[in-house]
Length: 484
Ligand code: DUC
Ligand code: ZN
Ligand code: ZN
Image 1 (cartoon, rainbow, N blue to C red):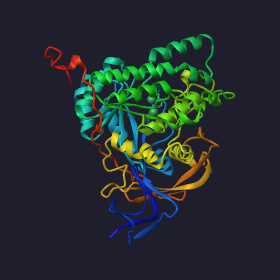
Image 2 (cartoon, rainbow, N blue to C red):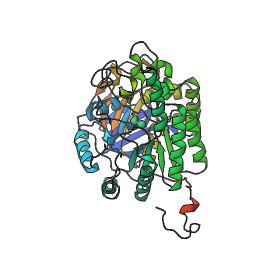
Image 3 (cartoon, helix red, strand yellow):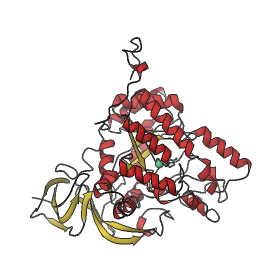
Image 4 (cartoon, rainbow, N blue to C red):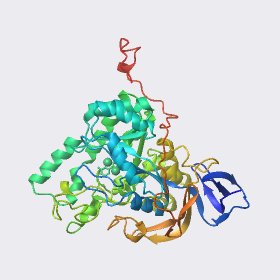
């Protein structure tokens, strides 16, 4: 009565660890029990961990940057890389650039995404919130289960300004969607760029200081205030500073409808990595930039204490050549070098090795940070858990094997990995998406296009008290009905 039974493994969820078997039927988990007999196929998970498949909640796949540079990974290579890294679903970004219709952009990505080997949804980046977008296109996107919208507080071609952000926060809230934000103060960054350029300091390493920690802290503080004004849910992406994380922690304690993530690069790399000979440092350029050792320690403490829902890769693959980093030439100044680094395959191995193996986080926290919380925050109601009825999205993990990170193991379209040479313990051996084994012992078994679009539900705001601005409360604002 089961298509597949995974037996003899140690089942790990966001709440428990137990010796158990899992029975899969028609792509769903049909039973979880101490012992399950039968099954057309039996997979021996002895000595292994059996966990919900990773959900990569932050990736740039087949996406043009605002400068017009296309990522090296499309939905095939990006999803293959994700699968080899233990993920059974992901939520890449769909980018609306100025002047584009959201409907058209979504139609383009629907074509691109047909090649995915894992299940997928999209976060929708809004850079042009026209009346039509706000009143017509966003509700339509929401209607098809795209329940997260991302905005930028930096980059001249993306930045919405505070008013535009309030509009998006309000529309998102009205529909039960969540707004995600890239929080850096645009003017601080531009002022630093001007000062550095005036002195001719344009090598990649100066990228690291061009985007000050204060620029992130100021913008996170402002983003939280804007979201509080309209009592809307907010997700702060790629938090890179101790100060920013502390602001998130404090606002959460006060009940804000707030969520946040950090990324492995902020735990693994420092600004010294940008200070390599020639233009080598460009491999380590991302925004916000990687910081220093003290920041890494602080971010781990915030991971341990629950400031972050997720650790996401922010996979933004630009090759180390004229198609990626260097479209403006090999000697381009840092503001013209594409921003971002790959990491979708390294995310879970890094988090497991540096987190679980090093004793910084529990197995439960690993599952929560890599899968369960993303499912809850972003409305993937059938994923992120191993309960009967859920999609059979499972990773069988060998916690003992130690591997040195190589480019070949990333299985992406990149020509470098920023994690090259790191020794990581713990590898995903079998990855299953809706009951289909897509990766097994280093081999890709998935058919191109086997991934399905996941229509998502609303953000889960359980336990978030929210905030009522007096001036938006009809009982205290002379009855003005201006609240969303
Ligand atoms: N923000 C991202 O989230 N990814 C790549 C570059 C950026 O600015
Ligand atoms: Zn960003
Ligand atoms: Zn990103």
